[in-house]
Amino acid sequence: MPAQIHQFPCLQDNYGALLHDPATGATAAIDVPEAGPALAALAQTGWRLTDILVTHHHKDHIGGIAQVRAALPGVRVVAPLADKARIEGADLYVREGERVHVGSIALDVIKTPGHTSGHVVYHAPDEALLFAGDTLFAMGCGRAFEAPAQVLWASLRKLAALPAHTRVWCGHEYTQANGRFALTVDPLNAALKTRMADVAQMRARGEPTLPTTIGLELATNPFLRADDAGVRAALGMPHASAADVFAELRERKNRG
Image 1 (cartoon, rainbow, N blue to C red):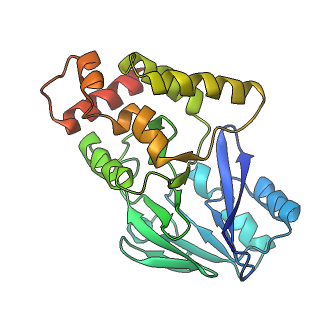
Image 2 (tube, helix red, strand yellow):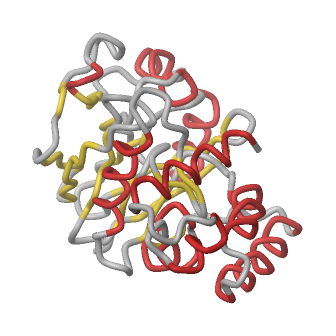
Image 3 (tube, rainbow, N blue to C red):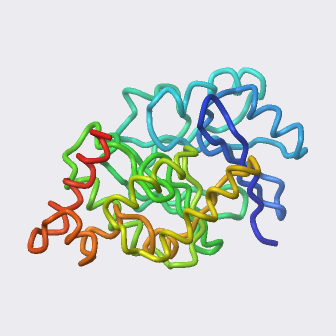
């Protein structure tokens, strides 16, 4: 039986996600931005929480963990080893190349430094699922807070190499704003224009724009297209390295 995902809004623009294994009944929360919505989502689905998989240490991703653990004793918390000093009390600390199981669902840990130095994402290859935290967004990426932009570019290249049909859940509903920026640096991209029209309709209906897919991001996300001739031309950087183009994209988005 395929994995089931329940996505729900938290805080101002965060998303929480529950990953459920129908074969075993195991359920993981991917980060817990806020306890109330997470507990409500569990009540709505009727799923029993067994695990919390943490992507990084920012409060808007871990702020609800303590309250959920108090309400549901015995839940296992998995966190990145590189963030051990900033995410205290986890039951298991993981590093790149290790595998975490939620029931029968196997998730590979991929280290993606940049947004934070210890950020990890969780990839379920058999299910073609990726929980990207704040490394990759729909038509965007996280700010490079704790590493140079070139480090974040290397992390994004890891995710871009995943199968195109991989479904991607991200930590925030930033799609429409990201798309507006994307049009300024990739203005001739027909796929991007079509996607923005679709996104506008989804948001007008109050619908989430996630999940996305790796293939859709490769076609429309300028932060994965730093080697595209059209993006380079728009930036006036036809001969720069992809890493330098990415750094310029990130700096322009920061200023915007």
